[in-house]
Image (cartoon, rainbow, N blue to C red):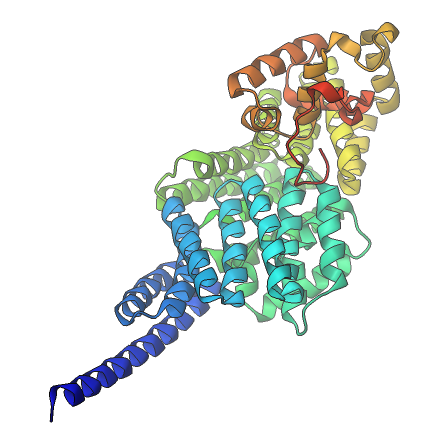
Length: 513
């Protein structure tokens, strides 16, 4: 046999081995994906790394990209933020390289979810916008275009951009995918906004979600658990015992591999425990609930330890969720807890979640009233009510209006008195002595932007944005960003367009500003 013939045989054998390697990598990657979807993140991670190594040895880019896609989600759940994003970005690049629409769409979905889980919902929303354009261009609008829009509405809901959430929802529902996957995805991502806004279909959607959860364990571990919305729905319906049943189900399903998702459920479970004990009205019930919430606080601390006490936005998110659990326990204490709720309200607002800030503001109003601080109580419920009005959070509005009645605060009169006492008609569209730039900054504060985001949108430094915010608080006579947002909404300043000479030329990628 001559040299040329031997080389042909060798090349053929190499091709066979590579093909076998590619198929093996696909098989392992597929198994890893199933494990990841069922919350087995550690085992899935190990298999993904094995699949990536085999695929690279075989020069099989498509199986490599698929495994990297799953690996990124595993690492995100396990608190390894930077490697998770790096893995998903590489998966996306390979998807474009081999022009695989499924892997491209899946990478955008996973990147967005990873950014949300690791504390960057605004970044997640930006990747959704980018992914939607790609999905529509690649001809997978009714599949990944749908999934990404549902993702986007969840992030917009958390950021307080509910008009954007509603737009995504209507666009997605106009062209849903075939089969049951679309409905499963809808109840995972849209249910939270449906419940928070008091939508008519919320209860029917939860019934569908609960049925899915009971028959498909992965419904809890892929994306935000539907049980979170179910717990809140039961609390709005004054059924805290049912809320706790739902919470117990989610906790049991998520405890296998502790992650940020479990922490969110613990927070809602603590709220339900406090609501149930307060409804019972006995010292024994309060004592038992305090002990149970104490266990939840300990579990939250263990999650942080398991995830390696992550720094940055992930660490901040874990700390904020843990502080919220502890604040719920303070509702059951003998002494008032206004300081706890003041700090929590301001932290949620600084984080960029006005919905949670409004909830904390309502609790602050009750705690301040117990301390005899009537002015603080009235200011807190006014600010929280203004945010709920702006969002269109109907159940939250009912809660806050009930608190206002309990405190004998007339919301409309309180707002009118405040505005009449601090505005000057000669100032026209800029009351309170605000400059044009301060009006711009106040509008962004009312939209839940942090100083960093304000700086980015107005092309100023973060420190300069902080100075503007401090000046605004002084001119409005308020102590926090949340109260400033309340004044902005009540006065109409949150809706005024600043002079065109000072407006940023940066295009908006989100709906409500």
